[in-house]
Image 1 (tube, rainbow, N blue to C red):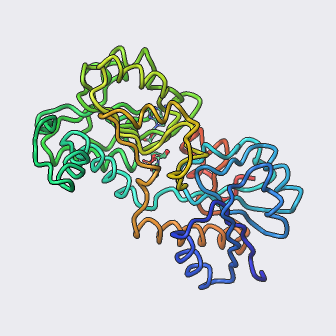
Image 2: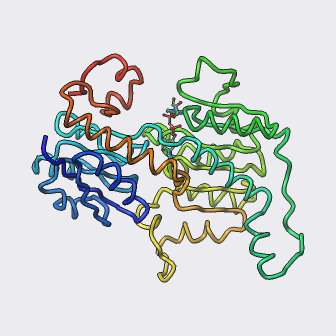
Image 3: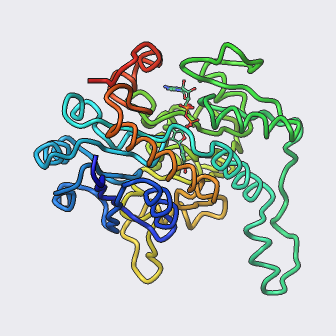
Length: 347
Ligand code: NAI
């Protein structure tokens, strides 16, 4: 095949070096677009063989129809999660590939970084000492040792977090729709996890089933003072309910790397603007809430792995008539064994 042309949407300065490097090793030309892919911008994909998208590109059925019309063959996600792509609509038209693992360590370590920062008030201490305020008032935390952490989703990231937590001497309980059979993890029902956990960390995908799994009813069951960590997807938490739980002093702290309505805000410098999202503003204003803007993945190792795997995914599609590495379809999304059973593309 000649030069493979790929429109890369939502391009950031930190994406370009690794994609240019790995693309340059093969005949892949990336066209970088700062804008996100959506119905208004899809025309930028004209003349390209593939599009490369990230978590906040909106690859809905209408966008997919247009891509199909333009002859775009492949949607290459440079993320693990794919809830922003209508894989049902893509089936039979445009193939979808993703990067199943680029550095689960990056995400699990960020979850722990947020947790330590929040519980030991590091964010407050940092600001205080910069102004020569050496008072300790209000900085009391709690020991992790002996506390119970409830991990929801024990896939690649969840299991690394479990190892990290055990290193701190924490007791781990977990919930997963498909519990790992090869582990010594103590699985419990979701309600029991809510009731017993001092800390709850979310590591399952966002699906119709998991959307707003942390809602008023779930928070009601939790311990007073529970700390909630979300480095997975914003939609797992009903943010209004979270705010209610914080105001009621039920939730001790929230560490959020993701937020349901993050698409228009996260990854951008909005410091000179008035934030229209009152809910996000209110959450950020809380002394016991830490927000990072979907940066859990952002390590050098992860960026290199993302670019290398994406380039290999693209090559595997265009240079290989058989298997398409890391392909996703609605069947793969629902049936774990699908990809293992077939020895060919999804369609
Ligand atoms: P994974 O696929 O290895 O693990 C997901 C686990 O969730 C699996 O064990 C699966 O059985 C379980 N699961 C599926 N449905 C469930 C349900 N209804 N209830 C409970 N558990 C369920 O995925 P991985 O790599 O561990 O990633 C987890 C999530 O982390 C991704 O879905 C993605 O949304 C998020 N993520 C966030 C990043 C960030 O920068 N903040 C970066 C990478 C991933």
